[in-house]
Length: 175
Ligand code: IMP
Ligand code: MG
Image (cartoon, rainbow, N blue to C red; front, side, top):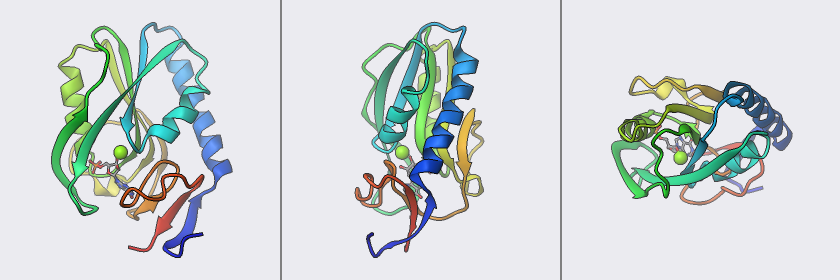
């Protein structure tokens, strides 16, 4: 283990159980719907989304969007830029945005504002982790894996300076 990792917050097994739980809820809520599009927010949501969609036993499509929300530090600047837009038109589709972690909420607020203008049939948000104490806007999240305290975490797709995404568990690091 890296010397900066100071504790495992959720093990691989705990994450797998949580992913199954979220997938079951989503499957139940979306079972009568057609044209389901799951949108992953790159890069962090990649691993979570890959595991999640394989447990949702419904017909669906996927796409990805990449945004930059942070400058150089670990603080959200509030300025969000689209680095890679969706490939598909979302009009009339039931869009489920999948995110790794919601912090200030500014990234998702901006993203949902943009996507709402594209006339999706519905728009919901699923995040594995949420830090509600850090919120700087009014954002409603439909599916939350774990609410966590204000600690900087890494692993399971989530990075610190582009590292640690490949850890199979979620850990806290020394800041
Ligand atoms: P927000 O706009 O402040 O909600 O920022 C959300 C994004 O910030 C997430 O998608 C992550 O990329 C990043 N982020 C927030 N908290 C953490 C953390 O504890 N570790 C790593 N990245 C984080
Ligand atoms: Mg992210």
